Length: 117
Image (cartoon, rainbow, N blue to C red):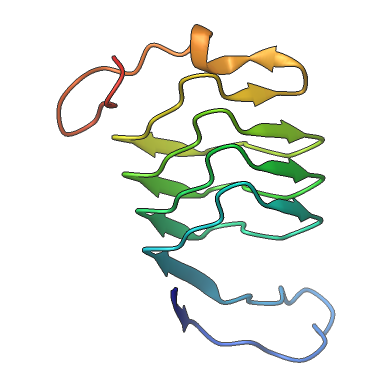
């Protein structure tokens, strides 16, 4: 697994200043049949990540971009997906908060679409 961190990390924010967190680039990672809990992936890019048959609980994926990733059979509970982009991802049987999202998502084929359009 390759992990590259970009950005700067500051100490405590002064009044009116926002803490800048690093973004993360994760490539070619295999987390198949894994369990993750309370992980902050916000504003990260995950490329060719294999999370099929995994369980993810109370994690933050806000603003994430997923490219060529596999979520087939994964179950996400209590996770935030605001602003997430799925590009060319396998989402068959993806379950989010008890809903089979893979059956609901219709991702278009092509450069902005998914494998299972």
